[in-house]
Image (cartoon, rainbow, N blue to C red; front, side, top):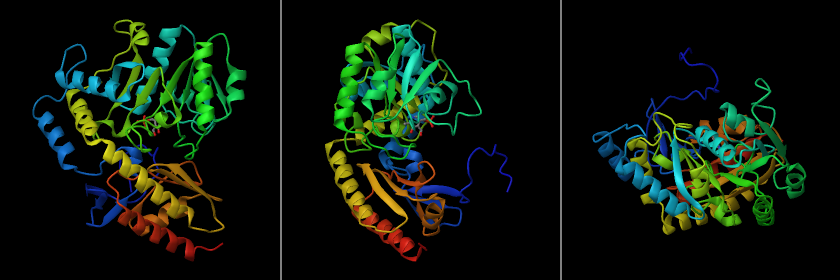
Length: 382
Ligand SMILES: Cc1ncc(COP(=O)(O)O)c(C=O)c1O
């Protein structure tokens, strides 16, 4: 079917028209349990009454306003965001996507340090615009476009010696995800992150933490980096930050903010009142009870995944509601089999099925999903 779109996405063959809670509904009225939340965007599912209410109100008040004018909604969203992220972060640059949040982070690091060598991680994923793609690891998305920008050294995730070895006089910053999402739900140790933080301090290198996927409670704390003792100089957020309205946010320290000259980095839609009303509505929903729910439901989901035994399963892993099931082979067949049973999951790399359910998921729905996954594996040939 020609849908008049550039064919850069795989077509999953379903036409969704609406959603309610953690279910998506297709044009035939069929309900699908959504365990992917649109790659981590719909953290409160679909048509959440309070978030929807705030967005509707803002739609009828003021949708867009250039960053050169003041707007209380935008200011309040920035203030709340810096308060909740804490640490050294005191100023926000708003944009419209995760990749844009990374572009700003890289440019701000360069402006603040006057250096242009960066250390990034193998299998790290930071988006596909040219700057973000330069930080993204691996050949898969890069090979058509090389040479990419500036100078990036990619090192194995979790290997502090490799970071040490690649530090140069002109190293501006290290960019890292606390848990690699697209790279396959890959984890590193607390010891590694502490050493990384110390190294940045000792060598006067900025630490850019990409929490576009892991942030906003996904792992059971507001930022995943809080579990690893990370205090970034630059923090990137996106995805579900604005209640489903496109958003990117780059938070920086006071010192970095002062190094950014007037006019040098702006974007027409950045921090528009609609998106920033979405931020306020989203932040209002995130509290200690919710984070506790994410931790306990995530633990329950992970332990149930770990109990599924099959020769095709290598491992189930993750933190909070950011989970992955690694297979010995390409995982597309499992995604398809789940979809046939009205469950939407998403890939992470070729052989991992990723679960990023909306935070509203309950143990009952986890049980339903686990029952179906078990059934799929029980009839799958070895
Ligand atoms: C960790 C991380 N960084 C950056 C991005 C890029 O965000 P976007 O697709 O909104 O440009 C993503 C998207 O998946 C991501 O997971």
